[in-house]
Length: 289
Ligand code: C2E
Ligand code: MG
Ligand code: MG
Ligand code: MG
Image (cartoon, rainbow, N blue to C red; front, side):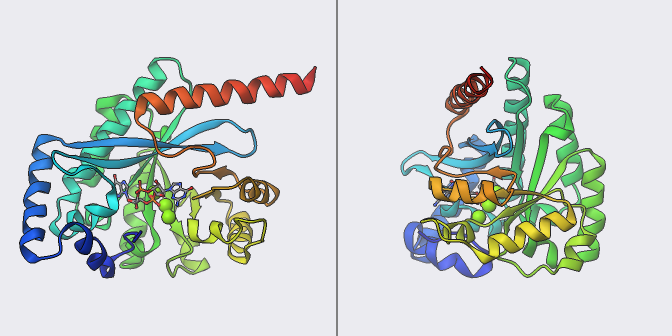
């Protein structure tokens, strides 16, 4: 399956959903309608704190409930949404939903679950993003420290001094910032040091190298780098126990991936989190007795 990784992967999704210019036009039309009709939903994928075994955060991942084609993954429509600028409207809907969901969880006594939301380069080029995030926090009453925004290196590389100012502005809201798919871009150490980033998310292609108990030089390099820069590390795409143990042994802070859970609708993810955390807590109690 092709993943969207920037400007040159368009042909992959075109082949699957829109092969001809006409089909592409139809998809674009459907996407515009989807924005108006609010056809997007958000699934949530848990992240486990490897120091405590507790799930205390989730990543919001958009889905398109297409009226005829069923539920579509982001890879099928995010590239076109980027190209057409519709991503800004979609992203705003996702951000608002995610903040409201996280605030509702807190009100229902599920404790401190942080939420992360992906941003696209189109969104960060607009000057209303600050207000959009501010409003999402105001409207939901979610405390800003429970919101993390995920950006990619390539988005920020385009204009580093602008990125620096802009990220500082976002940070002043109290939100946290993460670099997504880390390792696939070209950021240098000195460049990273200039950005007010809290978290590195190691791309799942590097985590995959350690699937069967092998080691991954890149994962270990990122761990060393994060230590000297005092950044949190999340490993993406963790699928096996071997990977989980390997990451734990390296001192990795968080794991996200199918071994813990696939992305789930809000109600299901809450059940999973409660179940998993109760089990972890009771195991900890057993260990004491
Ligand atoms: P991402 O931010 O790197 O999100 C992680 C992707 O990896 C998700 O795919 C998730 O389902 C998948 N994944 C998680 N664990 C595993 C695993 O153990 N193995 C494997 N093979 N895959 C795993 P998804 O939901 O299809 O999202 C794909 C990408 O679409 C995301 O990558 C993100 O870049 C983008 N995206 C998703 N939601 C949004 C959104 O609201 N706004 C924007 N701008 N982009 C979004
Ligand atoms: Mg992400
Ligand atoms: Mg990622
Ligand atoms: Mg990734």
